[in-house]
Amino acid sequence: MSFPWARQYEPSNGFTKFLDERLPLPRLVYNAIGAGYPVPRNLSYFWNFGVLAGFFLVVQIVTGVVLAMHYAANAQVAFATTEHIMRDVNWGWLMRYAHANGASFFFIVVYLHIFRGLFYSSYKAPREMIWLLGVVIFLLMMATAFMGYVLPWGQMSFWGAKVITGLFGAIPLVGEPIQVWLLGGFAPDNAALNRFFSLHFLLPFVIAGVVILHIWALHIPGSSNPTGVEVKTESDTVPFHPYYTAKDGFGLGIALLLYFAMVFFLPNALGHPDNYIEANPLSTPAHIVPEWYFWPFYAILRAFTVDFFFVPAKLMGVIAMFASILLWFFLPWLDKSPVRSGHYRPMFRKFFWFGLIPAMIVLFICGGAPAEEPFVMLSQIATAYYFLHFLVILPIISSVEKPEPLPYSITEAVLGSDKKVVKGENTSPAV
Image 1 (tube, rainbow, N blue to C red):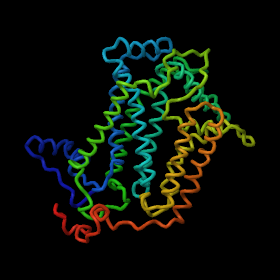
Image 2 (cartoon, helix red, strand yellow):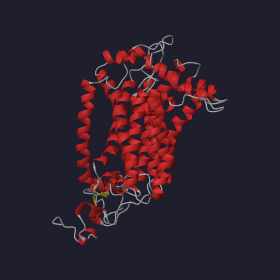
Image 3 (cartoon, rainbow, N blue to C red):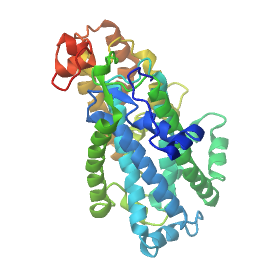
Image 4 (spheres, rainbow, N blue to C red):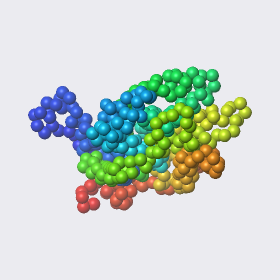
């Protein structure tokens, strides 16, 4: 977004002037993440998670490239090469643990980023495209993570691939041909491993490309903020650098402390022990479960246990699982409230904190639990509420609720209702 008060880039010497005239990369960085990008002055630490997600994407690409140098996508030796990386490659254990736990931290910060977007309605106009590109990134992340989970070729890798690709078999008429096409055969083997490895290596770069579009789309309307009030005057903003580079740096430091604590002291806490057993097509694990970040959607899949007329329960579960994410694409039009921030929407706030959040927690728990009672029943209740919240409750409350009074501007929300400050008539440090 072009603000008339935004600082302009000025080359400081002959070389930077030469570069700016022929390849204005410093100007691009200055305007994207430097002092030339004014940002709302009231952003909280919930706005850190976008930067953290970008950082962990870089971690995944760097560690993934190193691991790919030593990995062989062959069903006969894939498990052995994974152990070779852990035991024989210099710092291979660190690369693998950093990559495996990096995936978990990537999903953690993205889930928190999505949570912030849902509560503060970051999907509303004029930021619809930012939200839609974010959902595309999330879908690409899920595909990439699933294919990466298959590569170690342990028990959970093999049976997870068999179960998840088997879902396509529930589609009438074309399901089984699609499943065979995905696997390159009738069961996970060399063909499937080669395809998944190729796509797992490629998709992170696709994600990086969509992230660039995501950031580009963000810079057109500018960042949202906790009040949901748009920028009105220069006093509503501060330069991104140094204010938010420092704030993001502090958040990154905390995230790295937690990340390295997992990598060095609890590297296998978020994994499944059965994946340290080599894949055996003749031995089915007692409890097949995906990685933890797939649990809520796995719970939705398993919530359907009874056929509905001529529609098999398995097909209904597959449709519901994909629909649970695809409906996010329609949020900008399902939520019709003129107010963005949940802080000023009393009805929305109650249903969000005491409805949607508990439902998601239940789905997380049930997705990692065995497919037995009471987990099946709880997942059915949570799934029903999840869809009701977005398709019924959210449109209704956005039409009938009476929002609380909004501040006139971002500055008023931060510094009070001093009219000179609010209108930008006095922006000296003493105010």
